[in-house]
Length: 593
Image 1 (tube, rainbow, N blue to C red):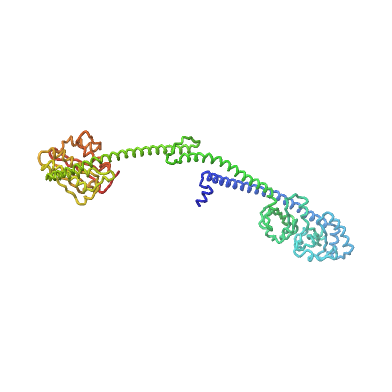
Image 2: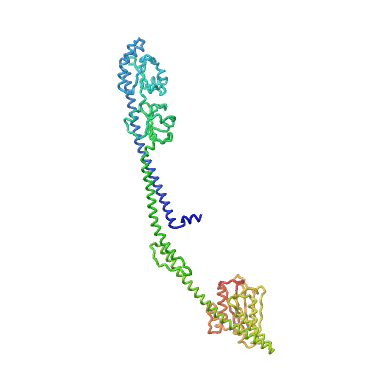
């Protein structure tokens, strides 16, 4: 995955900016184009609906006018005096000759000339044919349902069921009410009407390309259609369902979407169905779709161009700063003095320059430390020569004293040699020793002092066994003993004693290592003791010009460096009674440095 990202450079800032903005641009343009396309489509459908609805309304009115014409002509025929007279005679039982029956023919022919829809007129006296003579009876001709409705309507025009349709003609019947018989029924008029009731649609109305009109009766039977093949094998209930007056919906017929509008005739209660192909309505949207597509392409190209320029403003300073930040081989990074147009880039450049300055300063500091370290090592190597000659001299002195059988002096020389070897150590060795080693060093120092002071000096070491392996800084106890001998025991006339007590103590809820050096020497005056305590508390540097308190101050400073601040040296002293120095350290090697 990482190889693919690297190969396509998807991890580059410029590529990420381009892809991110391009994705946003395409999403925005796609959504905007989709909304525009949808809005215009809905607008076109609404306009087509309004137009087709008005056309359907006019067609319905035109159909009602045509049917009203048939109704008017049938009313004229029903009230004709000759027909009224002949039918009244038949009802009264009088004989009507054939010539009398044929005499109504001119009247019927003359009436048909007023309407192209009327293709024939049949006259019935009661249920029997009156003209033409060889016709069927009324029930066989129009059906029982139409005959019953004709009687119920009492002289109004009634349309027969389209099942009675024959040879492309529809049948309409009207009962003749006889004026001489107090408007009682005397016969019927049957009209044969051409089923081309919708021929006027394509001739009198301008319609949308591909639109068709269909006429259904009250029983959902197809009466007339401008495109009968379209509705082949289509259920009429599907076409006419859930469509009240003036409403529309989109239906699919044989894989094509149609806008459906239905209106009902006020004369016959027949339904006019108008079908308009949605494709014909939205045909102009193809140009809009192409325009939106080209707008998207041009927008993307233009966006890529602008993004390329914008990304250059962002990434070019980053590349220049990155080149500056590349550290040369066996060298240090250089300051970048360039000022950028971008505020954030300037802030980043300032941080980089500060880092370079600190790096140069750190390198210089390390260089100086290495130089001083090398000088110190050279001086240390030179200084090692002096202890070497000193040890050789002491060893020669030791063997000289052995030859002279001065055992005490020889042992003193050996103790002094071990004392120097313990004090002078190699640079690669640790400054921390066990408490046992430190006590052995102190005892060697006491033996040397015994050689000097003789019987005047007595000492004791009381050490708890658990404390012997505790690690402490080197030369931490010996300066306390040295300070007690020089300033307390040596100035005193007579014998003196020194006690070194090492044990565990409880102080402030913590178990500490307690080291106490106690002497019965001359002690210190109060003002001298207070001055020494102040110097210890301030941790000031030892005054090399003064020989008093140097060891104590050195120990105090080392403790502050090695341990936390609340550990250190505490002094109690009284004139002619001696001095007690307590040193408290934590158990274990707990160092802050």
